[in-house]
Image (cartoon, rainbow, N blue to C red; front, top):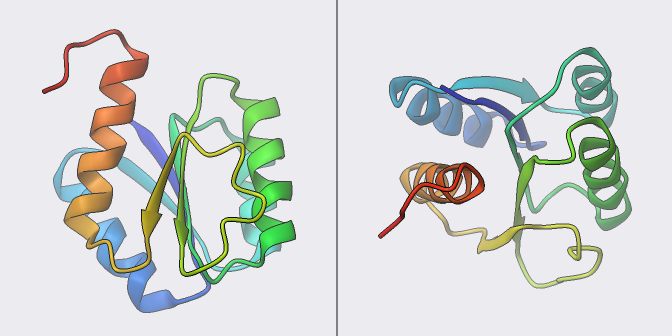
Length: 120
């Protein structure tokens, strides 16, 4: 279905989100560091990206800019704890308490919206 970049510095969250997205038919790519996320962006394009809350604000902004330059139609979801700094490039914001299933629903919703499909 869709190529999704998952960026989080918490390995357990990456694995859980990867599992849920893969079961739903998506192709997740995991990045646990800024370097691995930057490398993934340089090597391929993505349909969606989920940037975790633990990723520092400036790194999230850097990654979001690189993603938008690489894939202008990409949909970006940013998870937040308390700071909404540097989230202007996000297509959706979600609290850190969002479950992997809620992240999946947001990815599907944004991709359907981008593709002009009706969402309900």
